[in-house]
Image 1 (cartoon, rainbow, N blue to C red):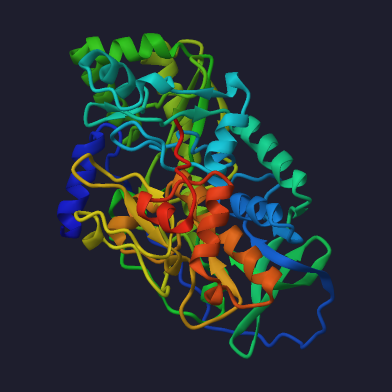
Image 2 (image 1 turned 30 degrees about the vertical axis):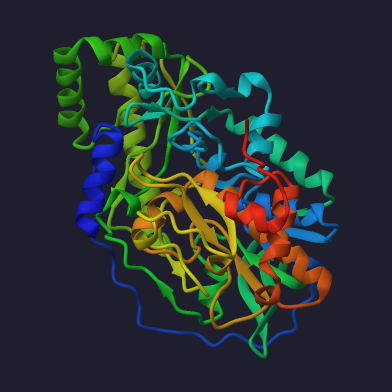
Length: 486
């Protein structure tokens, strides 16, 4: 499937009203063509640890907890004051498709643990008995609530981001993970082709952490890129999967009234959207959240910006804030259900979909979708984009960087092509790859070997023990029964 056709498939699958195009970037100022010489210095060592996880988003949080469950001493470095990354600070609270098209939950393990342990009033989604249903009434109801696609209900809940922050921290502390917040990793420590740790900056200054195994869960392969490794950046910058946004939530709304208006007043809805586009040029529609009085806006989505360029990131934040204010005013003045609306929260973390993808020992590619290929070194199973595709096998080799030892990767920058990246970047898949990387990283550290030398069967057995789901053929050779959610 070509990139152009693939983009069309995504749009038709989820509906253009959910995934529209983005706004183009504006020109930037020229930078001075100068450099400075920094003085050489000694850097104090902050900690020595078995497993160093750099980045506390969904994949990093899962990796740290999984490694801790194997008894490893784990240190996690996170630039913000909380865990969860885009699933919390980025307000990506719609947890997309954890069940396959037959209604079986295949993204399990820590992903399931997170959702099972959240308070009941912090999760909203279809009942287990509805997963996989395709009757028109049930599918139509959940399609309005981001949990039905292609006429099939899926386990795609929305969550309370504050509850997820608290739970993520609690689960990490249960495994005695050393949480280091307000710390920004800036350089890898590499000796003789092996990553030995990382240097980070904080209010204390520049410090180092030494580790037996490092896991890069920065989302942008920051450590790998700064170690000089090659990576792929071939995503179309104007595609939805490359757009950047700052999400926001509006409180004081009546989402039931809004959904009724949207579904039953076609002309009124069209006129309202035209009004918004006329005022703001780019105009978003809200998603449901975990509460009926809170609306989620996953945008505005801005195209052509780089997630690893500080000026581009700044420009997105500025434009997003301007458009956020305009959205609140327009909805409050003209949208049914929004008469008492107020801006509840602009996301503290910018929403990045794609920047770099590492080159690994293996990769997930479009060619494997149709035949349902199962890798011998499978460490997870992802749901597919449409019912015509089987579930997607994720190999361990996609988490192991080529050209360097001592480090693994998890999250949206694992080795894959652009088509596969469109779903591997999402929160459930980041939990999946983080869980696998944490297990593998701890096994490597505990055995005193390089991550690439860890036997995949050992990883698979431990993942199954920790509740993950793997393909039946992998379960058979790993000597463990199914762990899929019943």
